[in-house]
Length: 369
Ligand code: NAD
Ligand code: UFG
Image (cartoon, rainbow, N blue to C red; front, side, top):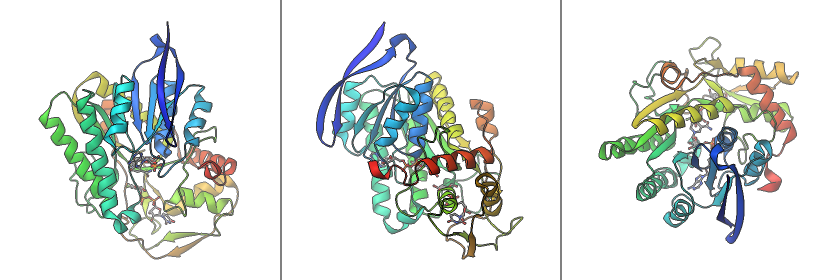
């Protein structure tokens, strides 16, 4: 039997009805609402979801992404995404989505993520991230959909801890409003679960997601000058920026630069599928670190990238960046034992795929934003 459905799309406030082919209905495992599906991690997770025969619905207001990423996801997978343009703080758009689709679970990526911006505009961050999540949970509750995977961050761990971080370690002593939004949301989700045992929630604390889908069709596309290491390094490699500033060589680490746990975005995406399987099969609330469990210094990272692009990455040593911790990497035991999660891709592959994406899309999705 084939499965078709009429859905109403909102595209720049024009409503169009489209007949969507989902494939054979017996093939569909579950219908997943992905908030922030057009973004970096969301789009890569959509690929994994579609490839695993889930039906994917995305809601995104594209404040930090382009609709083009979802077109590319459809190109990669040969499957359709049901996509809504809207803000998760708007209850009407969420009600419309839940009315029009029989959703089994939500993977919630939508949020603002710049540490620097959050210091300048804390209210915007609390409103978008915290109020957005509350609104989403309200509507999920209204429609009796109580399965949720939430994008948290390693940044919630207390800043005075020693790596590797495990999920039992204390959280909340964070250094930015952005980090605090993630911590507050984690607490809200715990309270929600305490209030109603039917909720099934997986909180995923990402370490440093990098890389791109190996097709080079989707990847990370930050607006303006990137804050993060990988997008900056790849733009230096392509000559878009003349040099990278390494934020200090005075840390107490093996070469004086900060150590981070980089994880390939496709490994991260796979982690979401494992978390999804878990919440769909049993109730509970669990927190998982998603990282590789290995730490690379900034200079080691530059060295790895130079080997892949076969040219020199110019860099200068600069001042420390406020809030940077010397060493951050994950203890991945819990995700391995309970989800069966293990990274496949190494730092070389992270660099190869980023460079491929950057070479094929030197301006990202910019001409389509
Ligand atoms: P991203 O900015 O690429 O994706 C977020 C998406 O959410 C964007 O498409 C944006 O347009 C959308 N969005 C934001 N606010 C929205 C709203 N109110 N309504 C609808 N859509 C909205 O970011 P990403 O790197 O893909 O991160 C996804 C999630 O993972 C975020 O919650 C982020 O905080 C978290 N996270 C990211 C990292 C990282 O380094 N990338 C690390 C830890 C946690
Ligand atoms: N770095 C530089 N120069 C740059 C950019 C970064 O030297 O131009 C260094 C930073 O000092 C840090 C490392 O590269 O030591 C990684 O920095 P990123 O900005 O790429 O990543 P962060 O570790 O600061 O933060 C990332 C995400 C956050 C998340 C955090 C969790 O961006 O959203 O990981 O640990 F909260």
